[in-house]
Length: 144
Image (cartoon, rainbow, N blue to C red; front, side, top):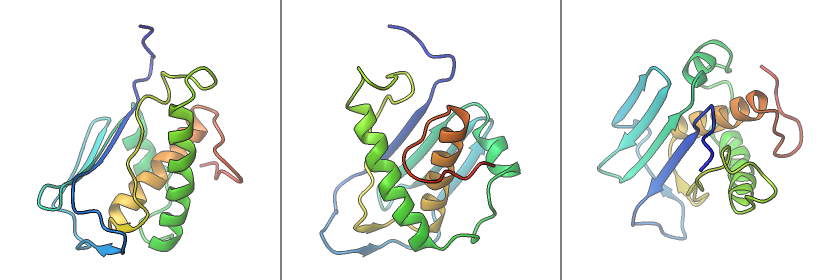
């Protein structure tokens, strides 16, 4: 199997407890860690986790992304819903899109309130990914 120079793994797990109504998670996440090129947000009690492993993302996030609270949570949620739908569509089309870029689907349920930090990181990763890999999911992509 051909290996990509830049390994990109985005894992988003939501296990059990998904209902059709909007569920509010506490706004403070249990664990936020950034080690080298890995950014992890997890709350084991609520059973969700975001892990972003991508060379350069941590540096980009700290130096070029808009600061936290620049965008509202509803703005981030609406963008993330569109970005994740396009991402997952590309994962399912390996003949059309590079399977080394789009390896795994992202399980993002717009009916669940994941909190600001999760939405902030997913949004910024999608912006980083589009700019770094010269991809365009839809509409205007901020260049930072």
